Image (cartoon, rainbow, N blue to C red; front, side, top):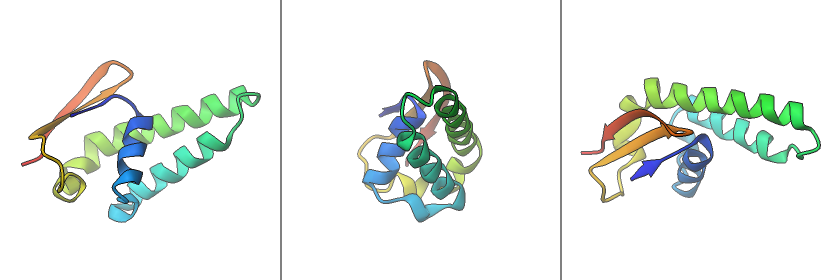
Length: 96
């Protein structure tokens, strides 16, 4: 499995209802919700919020993910997940 961006990670977390797994994940989901509410006419605000959400995504992947990976990936078949940030490889996480 491959997650390419903060948007894809948000979809995964929300689809699996994992927002409450860790406070940082809940904050990240709130950030993405606010990002999605901004219209494209608010370009500067939307860009700033996107940068903020992306920074939270990177922090979760690099710092928090190892501690919660068993809960986060409990029901997937893949043995590893690759995390990317807009084409840049961040980390491979073994799920088993």
